[in-house]
Length: 134
View 1 (tube, rainbow, N blue to C red):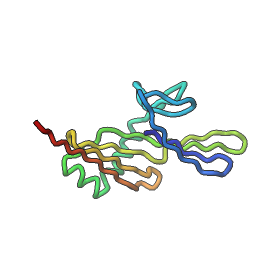
View 2 (view 1 turned 180 degrees about the horizontal axis):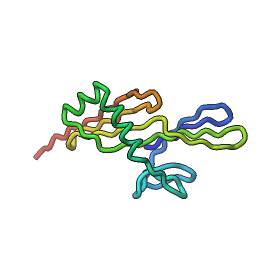
View 3 (view 1 turned 45 degrees about the horizontal axis):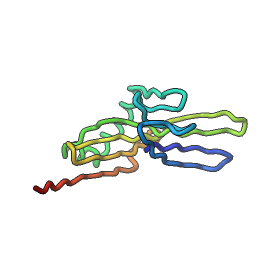
């Protein structure tokens, strides 16, 4: 799932887009085979940005507990905010990111990090239980 946030004509917008086969909807963003992509080009996330986001997440006590319970950080995905000014100028900035964690094959966690404020704002933990029957 990809989130695109923006401000147009003074109105905040937020939309979530579920993508199939890693493709990008017309004019949208997605996770393709080469990583995070924008139709017509890709977005490269610097190692410094990833390190900053991971550092913020690892300083949170709840994330520390997840790591102590066997979760591993598997990725960082920026949430890119787009602002369109009255003169048509477009500014994009990744002020928030999602840190993805996994625990074997049974657990996943998604940590929302506010990069500007330097804090974790939400943690979503998903677990999977499989009962095999003969």
